[in-house]
Image (tube, rainbow, N blue to C red; front, side, top):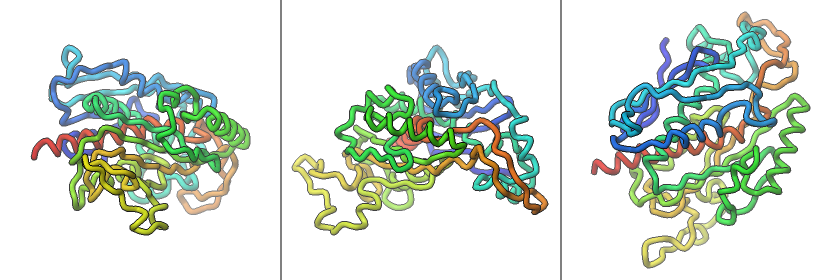
Length: 354
């Protein structure tokens, strides 16, 4: 059986390739309009926000994650043809995974991957590794430059039981990159960092949430039936490794409310007095801020011994080895932004064909 599902998007499409410990990862961006003058430093900045080894609270795998563009760009501008790129893997330590060659890590894709395809690259999860998301960040960085007037800001809003309860309107997004956990509130950031350090010392992992805000989105993106804008955003976010939940607007809290409380009343200019709809009504953007939250589970690889099974169904003890994030959330912030940008770029182009 071959692997499907390596592409995302309709008109603005990204197809990714490569494995965690292979020679390189990369992608092809199809459908990018011509004439966009690219800021390559901005693209690399996005990669640096995601790359491993950037701080003491993330995996210590060292990868420069420098992007090499192969096609679709001439004299610094997009040509409208497919943009091919590669990111070479520089710090593979495949021996770190020799102990799981025949064993299945609990809550990883190992078991189901073997059952589905009959063969797997056990080095860091191969194709199912979150290393693949680096290619998404490249594509998202280009999509951001295509959508110059739209602001896309994501930040860490919780780590474990530490929740930043403040509404996003009261936060200064420019402060998000001022700390290693990517929380725009310095007080809560310190608490989150200490929590992650504690978890790492225990050889364990912790989950958290990322909140993302999309501003200046034009009215009219999205379709009213299967291609609702929030449905595509949900698909995009849930396709990110370790994501367990997605909610937008009032989300699950809205289920506790009455319609008289939840309805967003209009202003005479068509904007709304409140925004419990989360900037999307009937699957179509209404010009208000789009905001959503993404939940990440604790990373499945822990630095503790665990009982599991091998490929023959025997119970075995697995040792905790390798280089892994004690909390994936800080490095996932640019991935969430990238996937949001890809959805908006795609739906912007779809809206233009009408």
